[in-house]
Length: 450
Image (cartoon, rainbow, N blue to C red):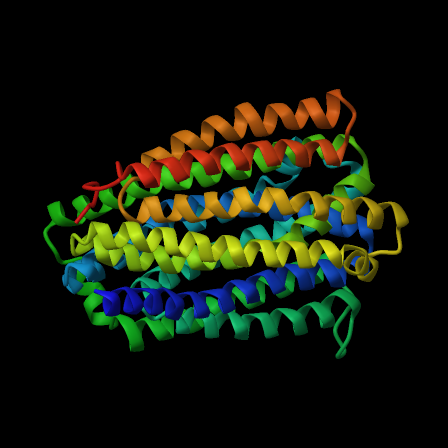
């Protein structure tokens, strides 16, 4: 029994490490864009940050299918049914390619309207509009990238997405350096250069992942054969993908919509508050990144266990992984809070932004404890099939607590960005406590899809 426990923990760690490196590289891409644009113009950082929030929100449409892909592939592999895993992957790719092209058109053609809804001021619109039009036009690359990566991770092949993101990070850094500032004989394109580098790096990722998919995971022949299955079977898998993904992505959409609304509140406070918020968000990404990784690694392992009807092992593993995630997050958040002044001094020479950002990082230590709990349990509850509960909790607390108190403290009481962070503390803390209760209650058992 003790050996099995050690093997499960080792399994989580072996999955978490490559996912961590992959997520770290993704965060580095965002941080690189922010750092380079901060040397171009502070207003460019704020504008591109708002545009990226909208693009990231749109990417959540792809998560409807990708979350279902991860859950179903993990449970089918746990039950030993590889043919069904291949069928799920084929359906997921088809659905996300179609939705990817539709969403790309919406983001690019609708950029002026969408940014206008966010209340972006004319001086910022000059930076945000060209970035969103170009980066949004190629959003379909991300749809394909996310789907293939989800299937690879479920089959314990997280190493490949990790290597692809490392490659993409190099392409993005070189592209930013060349195209934002005009090095290596390239024109100095500013924010359009940043968007071009992003598009090129995502295109490279998609191409390489297709090669890995066909040669290391599922041969092209088998993907085509999957579509020759009875129509009834294909529709059953599609319904399961949507049944899992819709409430799961709905919770993510609710959270990101909440962040968009809070950003619109912060936009009322002026460009400096908005720029500070963008710097803080990019910084704290490195705080909770391990939480995301251990949640994904645990979710895959727990999905395999549930597919094999090992519920008690799933329960115990969930507690172990959460404690590990909280411990590491506290260490990281305290470290970043202590280095706040130095971090913001690298990004800007604006004393007000440096002082406010450093204060927010100290406050964020408490916020991150709730956030790591929420990230972990929303992921793990989905992996066991309990997909509706995180959605109902998220959409209720995020809006009744996060948005309402964000407006009350930040705007009505005049506390500004500090008030918004107080509201986030209440939001994350209340949801975290509810999810701890849900896992302890074991009401999530017997909800497996396989």
